[in-house]
Image 1 (cartoon, rainbow, N blue to C red):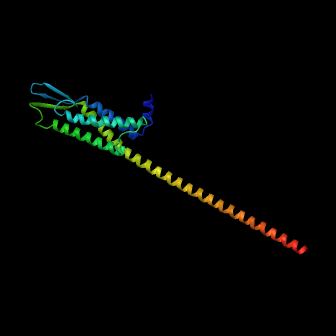
Image 2 (cartoon, rainbow, N blue to C red):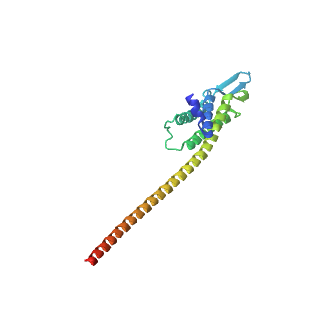
Image 3 (cartoon, rainbow, N blue to C red):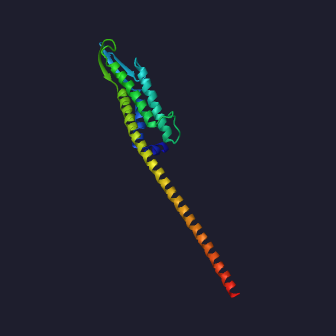
Length: 205
């Protein structure tokens, strides 16, 4: 329930990133492609099996990193972005994952891939991983805009706070100057009054 509530409070961009990362990660454990030879024997390969298993591992590592970082952020803990903005790191990971998927599918559908292959088909796993990766990329792109707006609002708040402090400082300085002047005038008035009294006494004498 706590995770569900925190997920609801995420921005749309962050929701796309988390959801896409989970989908891409689950996709590597499902069939990525299958083929049939001349004997109608089917060969089904998961994302982490077969001759192109390394591309599936790359997609899985990228998706795991995306989900882990998003989860830490969602739980209010510090992530390990290595000094890079989270949005940019998500874009990098999604591009790497997408590149691995393109390499896997382009190699699989190459005419010289396999022996006596009569037909080839894409599995649900590769489709899910592709959709998840694209979701992460779109979410990261939107997150860049969200971070830019947040930074702009923060700068405006800082400027407004600085202006308010400057006005308060001027007000305090002005009040202090008026107070000093009033005291000085009062002191001068008392001195003149004392001087008049002294002169009156001398005149009487």
